[in-house]
Length: 376
Image (cartoon, rainbow, N blue to C red; front, top):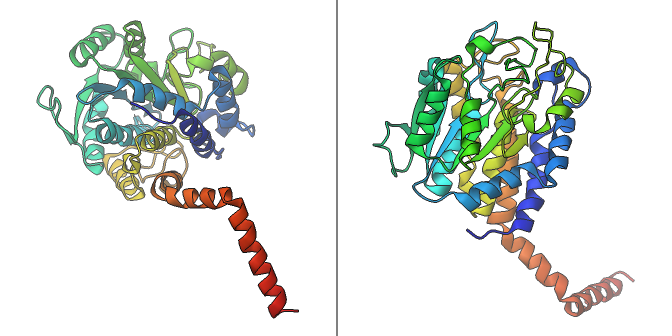
């Protein structure tokens, strides 16, 4: 597939800036520090790869995906003391599943902890995807396959192999999924050991990388799958990344790496940024979900019991922020696409007149002379 790399990277940089706007309580560790955690994590990740994070991940998908392919996506984070999944991640992963279906005609396969599985169904309905069993959904547009993954170590390796063998995905995308630290312990952003309620989907990532499958990690706090790409930097930036306060004393910093990493203030927004880059490259602004769909997702998430980890409320609040914040991010991303793809003729017109210097100079001279004649 051909697309303008320079344009994609130029607007990818703009998109990255938007989705990394530092907002209090965003990005896990930022709740414990006045330092702009998101910006520092982003800068570290960007320095490693030398290109905008969203456009780099988008490029990988654009070069690899073809109609009929499968992409495995995973999200879901059970948070204490509420002991239900948070809204950040599942909302964004379902929106991204829609974008991949719409933009590439691939089948999205969403993998999450088995207890979370039923809660994903209303989110699928909110974006217009019908949950369907495999292989019935193979090659059928607007479908999504939902797959459970066991909590704990037992059966994780076998389940990861089974999923990869069954779907033969071209890409594996993780959003707001907890990663083990260097000692194999999983933490939430507060430094609490959540190992006993986490599915080991990092095994899925590790096996996928061994098989040459593209892997993308999206996170906001340093403890998510993918943040292992900047593990040392996370330990230096996030207050509890090197010293978590739980008995392991090894910190919350993720050890699991992915081929590509997207850092955002809220992980959902990282997915939205990736959607926007794909829509730009495909010349299809509809690939980015609308503000109306975002509203439906937020409502569906609240009804399904996905909570804000800061309050435990299932009311469409995400990481301490009202759903309006996410809606506005989607709207602004839509304006970026709109300006480039739907109103390109305005830029072309301005450029044409800029190149017609003599004609433009003569026009300015006539207007100047007329103004002097009428206003001596």
